[in-house]
Length: 385
Image 1: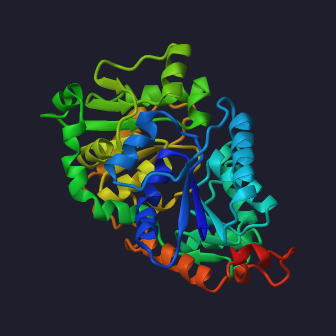
Image 2 (image 1 turned 60 degrees about the vertical axis):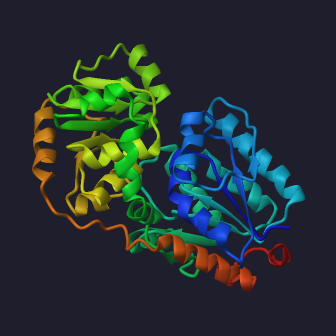
């Protein structure tokens, strides 16, 4: 029987957890099962990232019902619950704030300790399903790895015990620091069309996927209007839902905007590092841009990563508002391009800190001891493996 399980389900999870998985793979002190929830299932949204980052493949892959959030979440919960009927772990680990982390409900039903990597981040935008999910798992968790002190303080204000939360820094810093040479070679994966577009001139990068932007016609129109105000070439790897909604809403991008399907991580990071700036509603992309020294326009009403504003690496553009001054946002981000900010996300040792803490907890069977003294039930039996 393995000591722990780590359950992931989407592209950013694979990237952020890639070093953690490698450290677990090489550990002599901790055995693990890597479980893929099935939330992302197309090749260019999953498999390519395992290959490019040389990440260990999952030991278990679930087949889940596709469709709306309710179908995906209920299917993830059912699969995890059934798996735990036959596999008892000392703890089960989740990362992030997606449909997959709602599988923590099944873990709680088995009274197995829950570990949440990326805990206590808050946007305070209740429209976002991610806000609901991360709040839920944080309040179910027996161990939370918060990236920054500010995130920990948010958890404390919600009544989460200080004993549960450990501040580690953000593992995305580890990944970027260790893979810069790989990113530089990412141009070999680019299509001929993109290679030609970026050969001589400055270019921008754009990504839009967040449902409060994509599913709302007025918000998506505001983003399109902003992108259309630039004369520079724009590379826009566009998710399939975004492509569908662009057609449905009859929205058109200018001829200087090159739209393609989602691309691999190495070529994306190559483009991100070379781009003049990026326009994105992805929290991960805005983090990565900040670390790489690329300015950004964050296409969000609210963000769980306000640090990019604090260090002045990013400009806020709220798509839920009606704008007439699109040029001013472009002017603001252009003024940030040559600014030497210091990235605020950590020193590049987060993955080691997380794995070492897991080893320590597993060695002493002490996942529970980080819970409050009045913890509502006894989970000591599940800690015996």
